[in-house]
Amino acid sequence: MTDCNILDLLSVQDFNEVKNAIQDHVNFKLASSVPIDNYHLHVDARQHKYLSSKRERILPEAVTSSLLGLSSFQQLFSSYPNHIPATVVFDSTSRENRPELYFRLVRPHCLSDVGPAHCDYWFNDAMNTGYSRGSTIKFWFPIVVEPNMNGLYFYPNAPAEIPYNIIVHNGFRKPVLSIDKSAIGEPLLVCPNHCQAVVFSDEVLHSGAPNQGSRTRVSLELCLVKA
Ligand SMILES: [Fe+2]
Image (tube, rainbow, N blue to C red; front, side, top):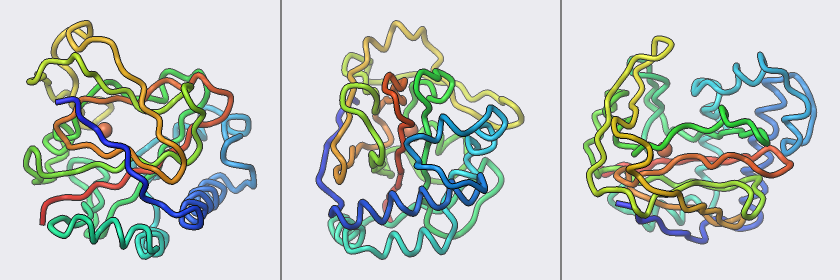
């Protein structure tokens, strides 16, 4: 499956609340005060590795609760009455029973900052979330993006069924494509405008697009699961 939709989901005011919350959180973690789009100019490899772990990318409970209470998110939830936010999963054995909202920082021209092609249900499998295939919907919000320079890759020519394996990497269970990358075809870059989101099911193959721009790409992710 390759389908994704681009939807208008955030008001300008709520978008700014989200951006400021991520900005504040990153500055708190780094004990610094820099504009988030210039993050790449102010971090060293050790700091970036620290902020790359999923544990550090999940927003704190109070921040998450405040953001999900914004009218834009309340409206989003009312559009999906049979779904609820997925809960925090740090790794295959560690979780918290509260909604999960997390961000990602992709530095310009750093290929290692984006992950390989995958379907989100592969991660649900590897992380033992208990969410069945096809039961979750991902919302990917662009917070700092540059048109045609970064965003998400989708694979319109990929086969309907894509095989994967689960490997253990640095002590973490991780799903990986188990066919040659050439079999999934060329990617299509999708990058919505601010206040929009890319919405897709856990069966859709995707990956982060390398950042060809000059600013740090910042995005936010929310997953809804069938109640
Ligand atoms: Fe994903």
